[in-house]
Image (cartoon, rainbow, N blue to C red; front, side, top):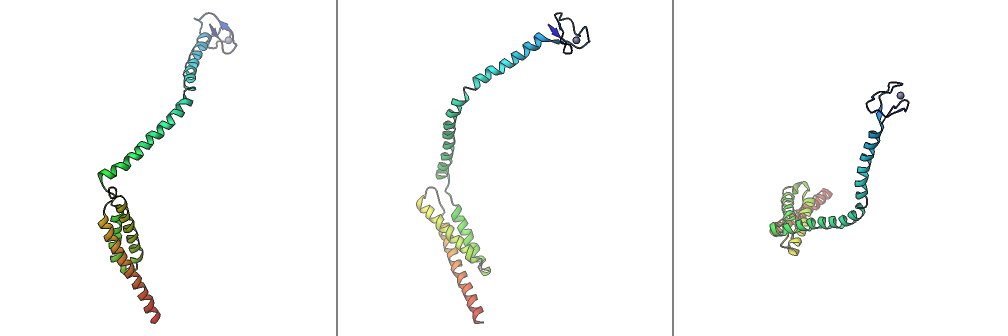
Length: 168
Ligand SMILES: [Zn+2]
């Protein structure tokens, strides 16, 4: 069956392509109705299957995802213990200690020396608490000593400079 979209006249002859009264192109009513219902029903069936699933699936997947995420987080923590030791802080302390001695003349020995002493102390305490994870205790001690020396000397230089300026 075909129908004219302009005058809504229906034609039973499927061979007709144009309306006999106004010449409008006819639309196939049966096929037009049939195809949308097929397309409309197909997604509805799948949607009805999907809708009841998400609620239990989400509740089930979330704890699974959390477990999956927790496992990779714990795994990398185990790798450094086996592969290599963390010598970051001792290295930083050594570099700061050397810089504090070199730049002592510019009064930078105070902050650099303090930083070297602090990072060296923390690095050394980390090595003592967990030697398997942290290393570079020698570097930390050297950095801490160098930083301490430059820190004290810088303080003495500053005090001496202040005293000399007062007496002058
Ligand atoms: Zn018509």
